[in-house]
Length: 90
Image 1 (cartoon, rainbow, N blue to C red):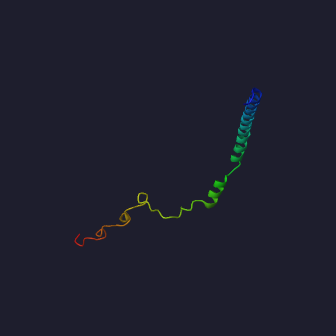
Image 2: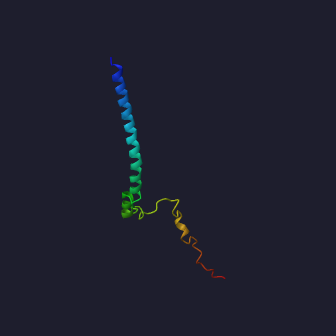
Image 3: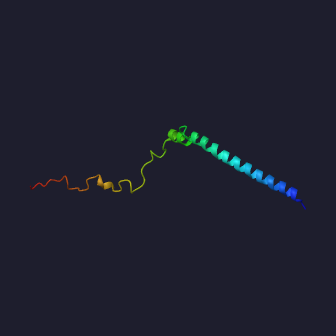
């Protein structure tokens, strides 16, 4: 079996490694967020640039939703055949 001195050295080295890992984690979090905020504030992102170049490819498609279009084709037309008729006896 291992003696107490070796177990103590292993425990101390694990604690030191854990503290170094936690320190590196907090350093990365502190400096990583500042760089990310600066990058996001620098103007248009790649997605915004592509959208501005392409625009909306579906703008020129015809309207096919019957709830948004005029569904009755006879609303525009005069459907009374006698509206232009004049009574000859009056």
